[in-house]
Length: 243
Length: 188
Length: 188
Image (cartoon, rainbow over all chains, first blue to last red):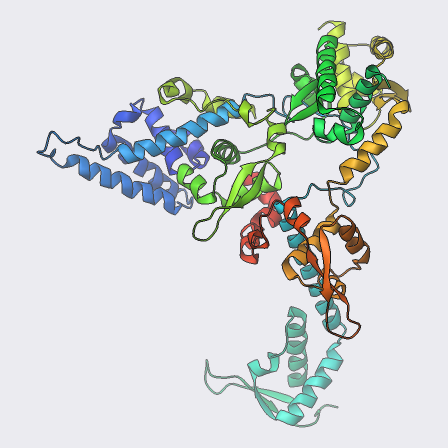
């Protein structure tokens, strides 16, 4: 395959688009597709996509399987009942390709029009200049409602996250150490993961972990793991030995 | 108020409006007129602007009237203002828009059957661009959304109504049309 | 390029600009012209529009040229804008309408908890527009009003019934088109 194939690979809109490209490239009749040739080339393209680490979407494989099925059907001997109209195994695929091509044609018709923003332009001061985005008035339709709902969710999500981290950051390492010590005076021994049970934010995780390290350094607590991969236990040793 | 005055007032309304102005829009402010009278005035105004043949023209689009620059100046304008809001739609978005335009009302699954690929991202994009709308639900299992084109679609593609869409081409015309498809896309 | 063509091109540039267009602006695109020549063309264009005497005029303002509506039509335009606004909604109004649609019956306090901002003004506005209704009182302390959507709401948003509202799962399906908007732009 030549270089132009490489460039074009990601330009295909899907398996049908790729098939239409192959039919065009080989200059074959869409009503009499040489399935063997086309499916061979089709599989080559898919192979190339894989080599280039393109994610080959499932729908490419569906059509590949379809091509294989058609190919094998066409190898079967013709039915003996000649009077009955024999159905060409390619028919269904051809119909799909033709239908798809019709819409690709329709695109061509659409973009031949005078397009706003490409060929023709609107007045720059249609809305006056004083209007800001916030005051923009929107034509109500279902999508505007979906958008509004989504924007509330997004805004609230951001606000709630901000609230949580603000509260969490108000606790200092010293306070956290005192808290943890009180906790351990009561519990004496805990599993490492239990210490983090109620901590939701990343900041709380980190501050708790730092407090633990400080208390271990000061020999208030001891970290114990009897065997590799076993539970890590935190043990209370007693009052601050250094202080 | 004589008709010339009203016509100029209509001009002003069309000029400041961010969407094509319809007869219905005008009826709200000129309620002393009958619909037919306003339509006549609009048609006279349209003729007048054609006859003046300026760089700006009065165009009938999306069921209403709008002032637009004449297309022969598009290059000058894009040169003048590089930041001008340019029309940009991908091949995928154009395909989905075309399918919806011709087959509406149509569901996502129906669109994907034609294209052979997942199209949900493109649908979201076109909804955001307001080129398509959710027009209801189909009464089948799962009650999926059905989609149709919007007034903005007509405005963007310079159509007065969906009737202006060219007929879908017959199959025998395919051979010529195969070529040149990619070329046209480059233009966008 | 003859002068008439250039004048029309200038018209287009002035038309699409959101600020008055100066001779200096024009010199950037029409660099084959001398400043004095462009000033002449602008002056001719100005005369031409004066002579045509339309509803839109070409005015010289703050060192440049701009199209404006003739001042005698300001009242018509104010009326028109008022009418048009009746058919549109602000972002805040859409948010409150969305919450009521999904959570009805719902009280003001509940709406404000969800939105995180005072919503009493917007509620009054939506009641006035008849998009929502007071459907009763909640049997808690203070017996606050509860709100629900009206028939006008369904009509305005193109719904046949509240069952046609997209559920959260369906909204989530469009997530990519909200968040990854810029990313998608590249891809599409």
